Image 1 (tube, rainbow, N blue to C red):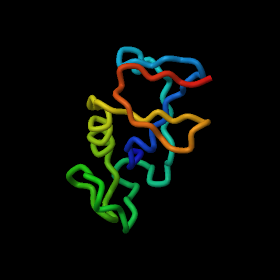
Image 2: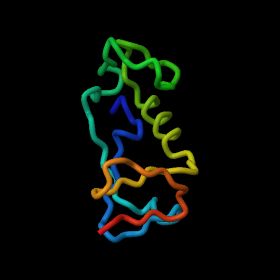
Image 3: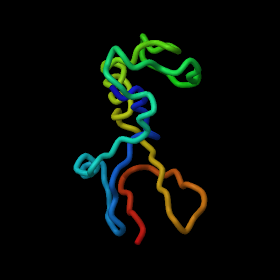
Amino acid sequence: AHGDMRPPNIMLHLTPGETVTPQTVSRLPVMFIDFDWAGAAGEATYPLFISNEVPWPAGVQPGGHVEQGHDCMLLDRTLEPHPYTYQWRLDQPSSIVKPLTALHIGD
């Protein structure tokens, strides 16, 4: 089990010049990062200090066991449709929030 399947730990592989729409985003290669809490389900444990700002699934508690079901619940929340996305550009230091009708990845 991973233990922390929140959006900051999920990366999509984007190609410069590519336009991503809600219809095509599901075809992008996905990579998971940050395996600090990962381990065998039911054996790995959450750190003793976890954010109380995160709406963790039921059963997640400091020092508690990491379960595959927790990952599934966090991933389900992450995959719910969102009306906005972040567009990061190398030539602009801040992010721009815009509706996801189409997202063009700059060259």
